[in-house]
Length: 102
Image (cartoon, rainbow, N blue to C red; front, side, top):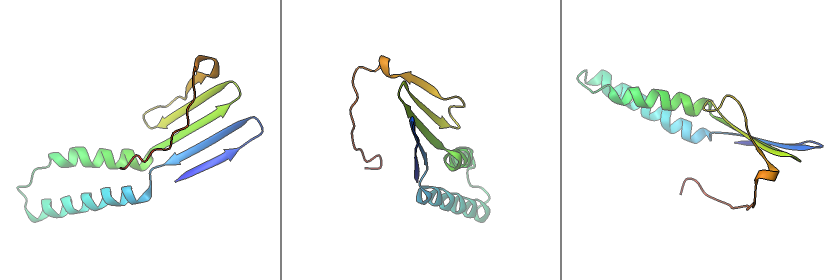
């Protein structure tokens, strides 16, 4: 899910994790909980990975801001402050279409 804001002197895009990926993680969590309660000898180590990753993906938000002088980006909750790259520091810009899930 992505939101694009066009303003007079800047462009801002905010992207969040697609809902279907979050649904898959929640389904995995529910299956693991069912297995754990059905068989009390199940290993809990998967929960120590699955639960934090699920919450991390739930709140993940990528913000990109393009201005005349700089390029700013932030991936919350990994970056709390925007990273700034000045256009003068960039030698080449290339637009590439990718499919991250293939």
